[in-house]
Image (cartoon, rainbow over all chains, first blue to last red; front, side, top):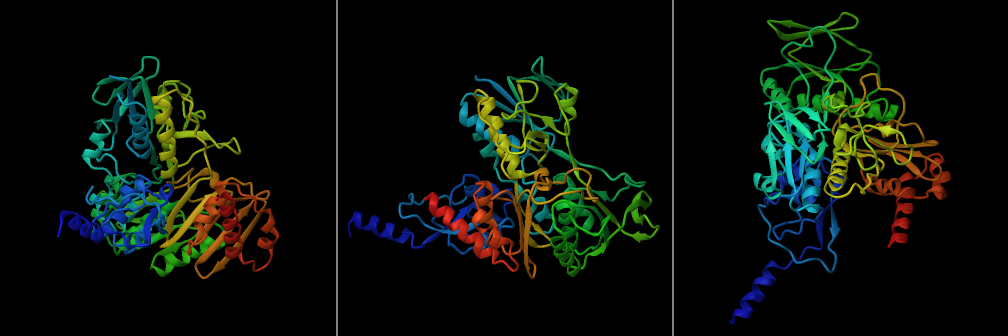
Length: 93
Length: 438
């Protein structure tokens, strides 16, 4: 198998199959951190909210823990736009 | 080296200002002067720390590296003097700092109880991390507590103490909770839920005195002479902006530091943000206080931009918004929704905006199903305020309709009809409006 095939396999492995991601309404956030505390993958969801970014972390399971537990209800699932930016690996930032 | 900006405070207003300054003026020197030794943490998050939903260490959103990357020099000291003419700040240690631009974001402080015994060990409040830690520590031994006051903070304390298995007595001067913001039916929902959580509610009850034993709280005495044994007395009767520094410096103050639309005080080198900044509402022109995290962030950002550049950025005070939990029920409060006084509060409480209690609505529409409750305050063809309790399906649509001052005159008669399908009507008008924007 050529190196090119290896990269292709790797891309397939990390391809995003989810159709929605967690999107914040930053205006409502008080940075309590319950979202990040309850994320089973250790994603700092609060940081995404502060930056007004959807949770575009490839580790996100879209399990909805943060959405359900946010005491201000500022997180929700939104369909991922077709022209979404490249997913980044940002765990533990 | 660029200009030196001194930010006095340590809350969301200062953090937003620091980011705005750094983004607009790369070489600026940013000095943060804050009296809270814990630095920047989520003050509203203390409510969830009290209920044991989150550990204390998770309340800090930024790592030391984050602060370093902003290039902040942090001085954990109280500022005790300000000389706008000389452009200097004096710290508690006597050290003097010169500045080019200064931000006052000194926040607000809880108003203490004014009853005999208020100085006893065991009388608590929640102004910051140390207070919350103190309550958590005391809860390990305490059995019963009395909470007096109103607004969000009183309920946060009640819920925190219940979550830590104390028997909680909640004193109310009348029979309605948060009477200047919530309606009678909304208040009843909250109080009913508190009762079901085991909270003992004492309506028409005044705290007359706190009695101690060996310097510690042992009981309270009510206005009618009843004694209730307790180990803790929590006071949440409101907050007052900390304007002492500004006032002593000769800056124009009323209840807060008076600022123009650029958040500049009466001295052009001094700006104000957060709870202390008393700005004018863009629609009514009335000067209002807001003790809201989101407003503090917005003010901090605009003040920071104006400090770093020419003061051209305008702070547009939109309809205030807070989403909170009242007795475990998600509640969104937007715009102008109430009126009158709340006898449990002196002034304003944390998480509160004076805009909420401005009387300007033409009609009120309410609907309730179980604990889910919706109330709309209608103006001339627009919705000027809303309270959404329980099911939050309308929270986002109403936020956008109110902030956008969207014309809803077409559905007003239907909204005002008996048993109106409010959810469907609002959703339809919101969807149509969004489609029009697309």
